[in-house]
Length: 370
Ligand code: NAP
Ligand code: G4F
Image 1: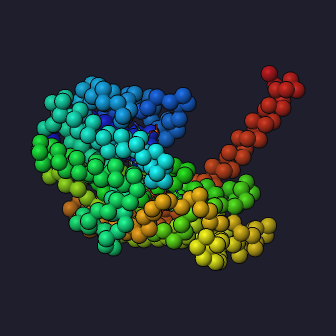
Image 2 (image 1 turned 90 degrees about the horizontal axis):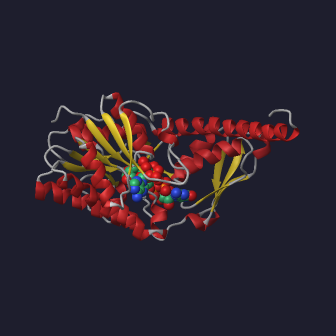
Image 3 (image 1 turned 120 degrees about the vertical axis):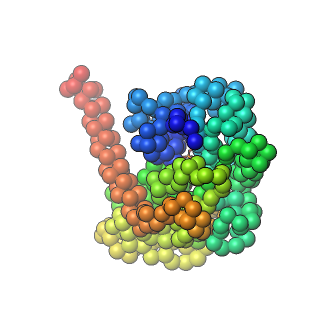
């Protein structure tokens, strides 16, 4: 492997991109990230890294081959982590063409840029693949040999990404591989994914800022890990002697209902689930007086998908044995606790900030402060 340690991360502003940047900077890499131009500069997850001498940002878009080519030729990376994607499964039903362009053809754009820049023998490529490929699952738990059965426009697009990476590995002998990652969450998770939606709502309900949480399929099963642990594995996959694909998961499975139960409990609210299907409700049976007996969770058809993946459970044996990765560094209970504790503080801080803003506006109006 090369002495230069130059990483290019697409999707650097996302949950995983931000943790991976921190991880690689700590390992002494020069880290370059691709960001999209937006009318509001929303770079909260990486704001603390901007200005560091080894951290550089470049404008580009996965839908724009020329911008990708330009960044790859300028940076000449030794490792590329292709994390950029329209990553929300439900949104992929509303924006299937955009999802296909970014999540499928975007992968091809990266591979071709590397070839065109003459880096095919010196640059290793990690592709952010997904357990959604198993979709309407054909076996439980899922490992590297489980057949794929994608079950959403997102998963179909990601399947192209998986196969084109494999194709370039075989056709051009490039060092490119896919991490088949199961769901991984954190306090930086996007707020419309189910775990973060739940932890934020639990914190808001506990602090009197929200009355109720509406969810979709409560019985859906996921293998949830901690994103901070998973980015280490992305790096380990690229340090392996041969380019190979790996399943990254905890090996433990929980339902959305269980996640909600633990999250609310951490926020000081005990729930009991009553009823079934669309009529199921989460009722408060212990906790703050004002909430006892109240329905805090209801099911809404708005959060059901035309086809839903309901039984994901990964077998991380290969990653454990071959890469020495520890899949249970952070337990399910610890993950829930990290997220809820973070969101309890966030909701309290947002409340104080809004009070300060309101008072400041009043003082300005009255001329108390100028
Ligand atoms: P995320 O938080 O949604 O981040 C996605 C990133 O992709 C953001 O930085 C986003 O930029 C960028 N992006 C989207 N469209 C783009 C475009 N057209 N051009 C350039 N950048 C674009 O996702 P994540 O949870 O970190 O996941 C990272 C990757 O792993 C994704 O590919 C996802 O599909 C895959 N994955 C995730 C999980 C999981 O459980 N988290 C599991 C398996 C696989 P903006 O900030 O500008 O939107
Ligand atoms: O949190 P989710 O939206 O994540 P999903 O669909 O599993 O996708 C995530 O993980 C994939 C890896 O398997 C990644 F490839 C992908 O990029 C993304 O990061 O939904 C999890 C489950 C689903 O079965 C969904 O139907 O929770 C169910 N759910 C129930 N109520 C809900 C809700 N999901 C969301 N987002 N919102 C709800 O209200």
